[in-house]
Image (cartoon, rainbow, N blue to C red):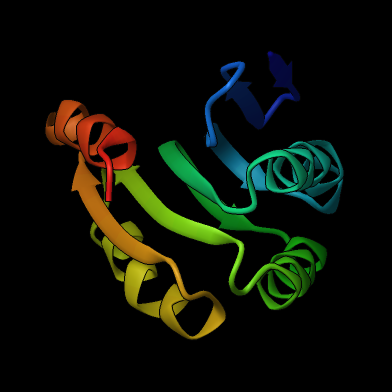
Length: 126
């Protein structure tokens, strides 16, 4: 299944607990209204999920979206098993450390050139 806004594209595969979120531009509260329900549906189905967060020309969050992100992290602290972040900027790599207090997930950053490794890691058995 795929859902899309101007900033976010969400892809899920039937039977899988992996959700791929592709972002470009700046995330808004409305973007969270699109992809959070899809993540929550996968959590209901699988118990825990894995997120592949693919950032291309990403410019961060609007203020209201930061609050949505914090609320989401608090609510689903234990529901996310792994997060693979794919990016192209040094500050994006720093986001992995910023996210640690908000989740129990194993979080790893991958440069764009290592996208295949990110996809392999997010899909591999624990």
